[in-house]
Amino acid sequence: MTDTYIYFIIALLPLSACMLVLQANPYNALVIRGILGAIAAMVYGILGAADVALTEALMGTMLAITLYAVAVRSSMVMRLGVLKGTTETDKNTSELENVIANIRTIFNKRHMRLELVPYTDTQALHRALMEKEVHATCVHSQLNNEEPIQTVIRLQRIYDIMQAELSSPGTTLTYVSASHLGEQQ
Image (cartoon, rainbow, N blue to C red):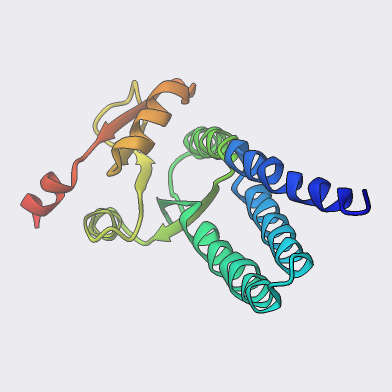
């Protein structure tokens, strides 16, 4: 009768594992992963496996969470190349700012950050896209006045997301595959 608390603690393992699997936000998943590791270490300690409990606490919880946090932080960024110091009219600048705000909203829903990377000219911007320094570029189109903003994307998944959700009128989305980028070099 006195060991019933062990059953409750052990029941927390599958519960926290289910919460981890069903979590959409990667940062919340990191916290739940830490809780899962702490519960596992506590169970091992209660059951008399102090060495396994210590290993789980150090490796499974602390080190894994640190490494996961670094990986999640670096992989949850969409780098958008833009031109530095746009010399267009104020109307075009505000249109570009609206498109960037719309893109930021789209990726915020997916718990991603939008990082703007400024470049001095269109050649440097294109080179950054070819060399995979940025995931996409967003500039004013000099060729088409009806759709003044041209967004070129090199990742299919980002293109699909933006194609479905970008609601900025006057914006052209173009997908450029990695094989096309390699041919242009």
